[in-house]
Image (cartoon, rainbow, N blue to C red; front, side):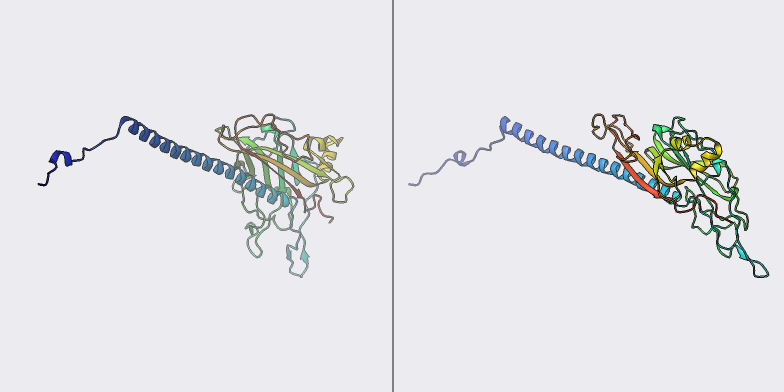
Length: 323
């Protein structure tokens, strides 16, 4: 006779998680969440750091592009024939007259200078510029569109804001017709340093200043001085050293007219503080290691800083051409 298994004995009793298993599962889940959070925070910090570094590089690149472009125009004048008279005689433009006024120079600057944004001055030497930054004034003639109105620029010559500059009136190469472009460092309303462009408005003749590149905290210049007239720099001097060679105002202008090249150095910083490790006693040399006397020791504020240095040779004569 076959025996039967009781119905209760055939059932499998359900079994839940023990307290230990639950705690282990919670711990493993917490570890996974923490790892995911750490990865997210790390990727966000890396993205932010990369964006800051890119912004610093972009500021330096753009500032260098503008400064180099404007400096290469220093002293430019279009000495092509203005027009032909009724009898066929070619009319040549008049050369700009030499002056003993430093504001009439094509290139002139000031060391460690603070600049006012609304006048034609470039500041005085050692007037406490932002982080010891220098100022620079570049002047040149514009160029008008051929066959058009003499007041209509052709777009080849621009000031530091990118505004095209028209040429002088026919036969009237006078200083008033030249463009003004100032470069200097100042602080914005929020305290962030910026490289500024000061220019003269063509509408009313007033001087205005606009920021070019944010985060530029140092702007230094050394001038290549040619003392023997061979077109090659014999020495590199800052603005104060160059003017110290002169014994009179007329000599100061002559010294500036002996400048044949510029060495420009800039330091740019990231906008966010406490984001980058700051090495102790960190010293930057804006003009390069060949100019150890020009240095900048940044504060330990955790900002990323980069240095850009370049040399520009002046390709237009700084003296008026011989009539």
